[in-house]
Image (cartoon, rainbow, N blue to C red):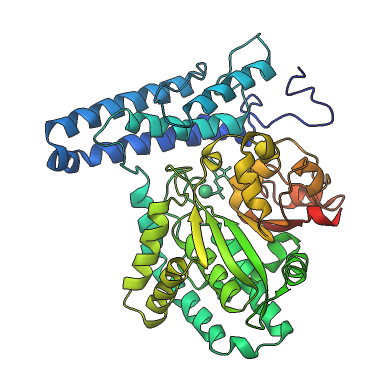
Length: 450
Ligand SMILES: O=P(O)(O)OC[C@H]1O[C@](O)(CO)[C@@H](O)[C@@H]1O
Ligand SMILES: [Mn+2]
């Protein structure tokens, strides 16, 4: 079998093997910091565990912390990646993936934190955090990242209010809007959802990272930072998917949103989804979230429900109105939430058709799939060392269940689909352009137009 490095025409995976690279710095600095914070969080909740479960709770807290300290030590000393032992439905698949990595890497050296693909070892860390808790009932369900996620929502309250007020304003006369103003609103809300991706907690190793001001006010000044803007192509895909309905209204059947972070970013996604449905641009929205706590701030089912309940209970006319509406969409089936285990596995998305065919089939039912955030971009492009001028289509390596669009602020050193010279120019102006979260892309691919 070809090794990762020699696979025909495909560049190697990014890896901490390259000393000084962003992957290296993440594995060396950011990941251990995240693990230390996880340990602190569990320790701070000791009294809560005691109150809820008595002495057993304290024992579980100690045991989980000891497993996590061991994990941090394995990482920092570049030990081999170990098989999982927790017997969850996805355990076998993780262990098979480890064997696959070992085959790709050859027998010379074991799969390990600094020698193997960054995407794989980073995903594996979050799965091991989950294992440490899972092996310690009664605290198995404790979401170590919950505090940060709820805090990010609470601290963004001003921005949430202005966004919900804006949405309710549009909805007032939405039925009378002609195509042009509708497109303008669509484009704005896509950008709000795009910049919402700045607010993730993983890149800042869990430091507070919320949206304090109204996101709408800064859209114009942020335009030059959108390196690829395919909004018009996304719009055309939505419009061309429109089909006649009994109601006389035309709309695309289904838009899927592969969610990224909870807190402010999730609100921007809900607002965009509300706009798509209430404008008739889409009839149904399927949200895809994570089934375990993931990359510090990613949305789980619990975060999703909590956010909507929180919006409903907010003492602000338009925010609570939005919350009530979102709950209604869910109840009436116009919106639904799924969390397939594949989203919390380390695979490149080009493997989805073979390794999670049911999910691939599900996505094929969408007229458009929006992929939020940096990690999804890394998985779309395989987290490989592509030239910047390689097309998005090439980097997708055949992944294309439906027309798809990545809404991503750049937080990892990978970017494809740029103009010749664009990457070099950016590097000379701002060497950290790929990792600072300051730049973004709205990058579209339509497999049907090939
Ligand atoms: O929430 P996002 O946008 O997927 O970003 C998570 C980020 O965490 C990192 O993996 C760093 O640990 C970034 O490279 C990555 O983009
Ligand atoms: Mn994330």
